[in-house]
Image 1 (tube, rainbow, N blue to C red):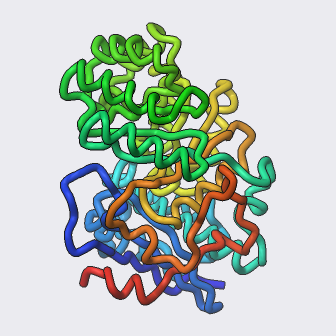
Image 2 (tube, rainbow, N blue to C red):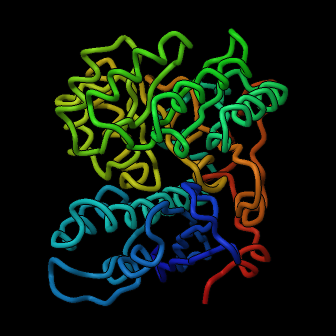
Length: 372
């Protein structure tokens, strides 16, 4: 079997709100083969930058469009192809956009392997740690503390036992920050787990103050309160509070995660399959976290492709326990571009057992939202 094409497909809603919701557009990767098997993947990044990284031409031996490196290769050689893409794009590919692009490709390659062998990806990765996994409902904060509390009650009524709120208006002032968390806890009651995603808004001193203030509301973790490169700030924060500190969605390979884990001393390692280099790199990051006694969770605020990938990944590692599941209300691509819709039942998500990712594109939806 040989790779015949790699395609980056940009999808976008007609109107995109100015908010931190990456479900409003999408970058889908298709890898085709001469055996008629097509794999799909997804990238959550700057979509057109990723498209350029994939479909751009060969420039020289350390700067090449990724498609140029893959045509004619065997899709089963995922480890070799990962390093080929990394090594032959060293100038632009050590971090960020090019690693993001590699993520979608790697995901699609594993999808091909699973489809060709008739096995779910988690089984090819040697997993089997879960039959089902608990999701947490992931949402932006409401516009006000009161609206946040109302959202929390709705998610609780839908059967979720854990909820995360994040980003704006967190970070405006101390009074608003505390009120947002207070009302979220009031809406959830005393039993459900509450996670707070600050959205990169504070310095270390402020984050320490907020973590102490939030602790009275029994939050399960405080996510990304600092800018991602502030490893010293993360260390100070982690050492100053008993609240778990979560981070990692901004990182794009295992070397970055080593900084967060060893210098930043974070407690929860968040891995986004669409940014870290796909399954091939995510498994290495999870192993590094296991060695340090740290749990791993997924990050994903995009489509069901990412959710499916996360289910396979988390079922393949021993240090997983919960899955991010987006419930952001309003207009989104999420329910429009895949044939399968992943739904929580009785507070849990089932582990997929179909070959590959176990999810397929809805070609009509793709055509409707595709950007020429």
